[in-house]
Image 1: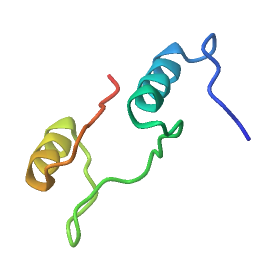
Image 2: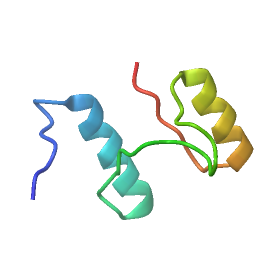
Image 3: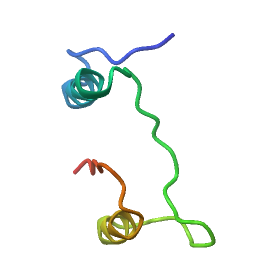
Length: 63
């Protein structure tokens, strides 16, 4: 099993830690993002639009 080391990637480490603290699950899956029948999200604006349409619980956009 491969983990995220705090000293190698502190942003992702802290995100996964916070997620685990809230949910009890220590994993985040990075996958393609699109709604059924729609093309893949390619911009932050498209991500926010689809996020609002589907009423997801959270979204993280790395800058």
